[in-house]
Image (cartoon, rainbow, N blue to C red):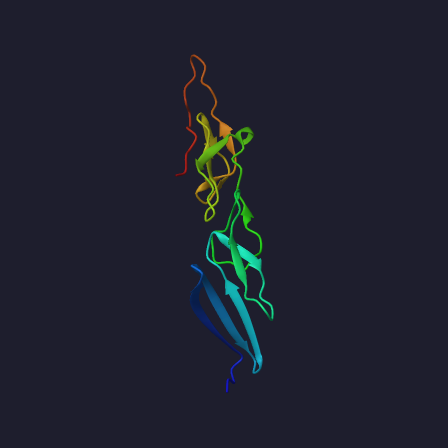
Amino acid sequence: MFSGSKLTFHLRGSSNQTFYFIVLTFEKQDCVKLIILFPPGSRVKTDCSEFRSTSCLSCPHGTFMDKLTGLKECFPCTNCDEDLGLKVKTSCTTTSDTVCEPLEGFYCIDPIGNNCAAARKHRICHPGQYINQTGWYFW
């Protein structure tokens, strides 16, 4: 008989070549909480019921999931907006978001991790002027 307040087990299994993780949490004496987590690149298609088990689907094009999930929707891929001085460095996949970098002649003004959310155009030196401080590139 379990007498503690919380005990968690992590189990890993597979069904039809789909790997999943199950988290069983025993809270109090008679309460069991079951969470099924699917691998990166997938999402929950249908929740379990009395007659069927939880199932998953791959993330649709233009979306991603980069961690174990129990969510029904994948995250939308980031758009590298040229109007913000950005271009694609690494394209979005079902398991990772798009990585943006500054366009040629631009420098990043809003770095977020290894991504750039906005960039600014370098100034142009005219005859008789010089570069006082260069813009930076953070990778």
